[in-house]
Image (cartoon, rainbow, N blue to C red; front, side, top):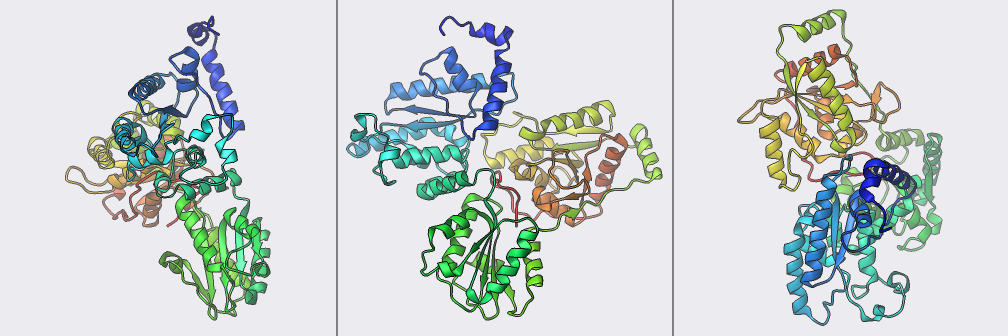
Length: 547
């Protein structure tokens, strides 16, 4: 290995391309790939810490030599990563203190926790929620020193029976869960490591999808309604887990029912006059999971007129359906299915008349000024379409002046308010139309939400912009004339509903695109936008959003 000429392999033998191909193959086949890098600055170490990883976890002990060396090494890796001639996101890092003895030397342990916070905050702030103090993350993932495990080859995560704060198992499982969550949900990490771990376990069991589409629970007096609902759900291709009330004899539900609840995307609870032990607890359990995971799991308590309503949180009481006892199974099923699986909304396809196209052609070459157009898009997924859009319509056909935030234009480590201000003052200030390019995950991005919100506001320096959406070829849907309103940015959908924004299919026809932009420019002065949706604090996750 020492005789290998790494520079020669990279520059002339195609090693970089081979590594990229292997990396893509590994990621397509495995959920996680763990790479154990050698210590020190070496060529093979650079492969492991610069080229290959999405996340770099580095361990060190509570002494300056170990801490300083680790920080220097990781900073060099980050700098080298930024200089890679590859389309790769910034390298996220997780500092992990280990062999840390806080039991015997509590005063010195607190002193070193302060040192860790001062030296390592910037690494945690790259991925932790802004509401979370890095010092609290450090406390949750620091690997303690337990003398027993200094001997032999025993594995704490296998041999230790519980996740007690005195065990090593708890901290290794927490660290593994952090990786499983892709460094997300840091609020829950500091609030409850136990729930954070359980959430990762549930996600791991599910894999890429839920085992069941619907969990169906019911009291005995509405067993016939439940049976009819099951048939209706299955007729549309849904997989239903039926919680048979005869298997419930106490408030603690049997393990198979809890498993079914955990592995179901949605849950429907039919509540009649007969009492079902534990049904209220199951409702709260499912709701708690949904809130913690930030996933599009819907919970629907259906309370019949003679039913007994358990003591539910306010947000669950607001979502319950109140039904007459004699409602037909067909009518009940239709109402529930429309809530769980809303019908896809038809796109208002903009039909251009020949006269409008002639006017567009005239605008293209003659009298109308070019509109300064801000382009909002998902940087990691859809930059290729943004570049094509700019090259085609700004440079080649010259029908717009492009304004967009490009990668590294704004330091992502700045405070949220500072980033919003820079977007508003430096990029949106003199634009008159905002075009949102919507792909498969655009709705999840906080920056897209901020850009839309800023663009439809009147400010001291600029008036609001017109707004339109273009669905990219990567946007998932059943047909070209429909879309799911819950997989486009929610603030954008609100403005489509009120008429301020329009939605179109992707086109490379400059006549169409120029016409769309000009209509949005004119529309901004005739209708008021809807900017009432709560501002995103973080990027979202899951399959779709919900109110």
